[in-house]
Image: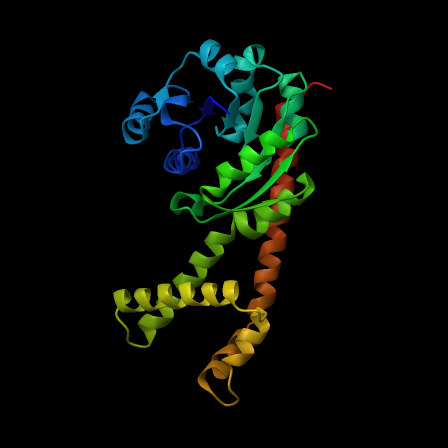
Length: 278
């Protein structure tokens, strides 16, 4: 894969650019980014990473071996209409657009092209994303390998069927926000028992890092790990009892189910709004 074009210049685009440049899977000079006209943002990315920017779609689209679609999902129809006539049937499209199916992209383009659809999360900005990826039938093995290597530069990668991407959105796509919500509650709890905010925050962060490391490296399940620190009559048991009284576990399960359902609803609404050709 020699030349990469990125359409959209938001935080996810920057996270991917940073990962690609630092891992050297593509040279910075072979990366071109574009957007709807925000020159200041494009200049920032150029100066920070040594990449190029351009608004000349007639030039950058035919020269690209890979194109990343990272505009707002609602803008995808207008964007594709501007450059689809310049697109080679061998060019790999990688979409990070929530709710936009590969079939929708295929119909907007009007020709059969290789498409990968990815669902990373915002932790990509610190190289710790959890990313689910699916492919259509036109993606060849070399392209799959490149997609895997690219998203590995910003975290963990797993390949799934496209119908599972809504579930991945509900679990890990939105997942960082669930953890932040939990940390908010723990911070407030720390304040109520007399800890300074900075002290509480530092303790919470290290506790989360340690617990995540234990889950990753231990052969025990989360349930077993929890029971190991829940001594009868002890402080942990007292705290867990309150969580069970409020049915916090059920709330988290329902939260994930509802986020997944919302992903499906948004995808359908977006598909309907695109008024795609049959």
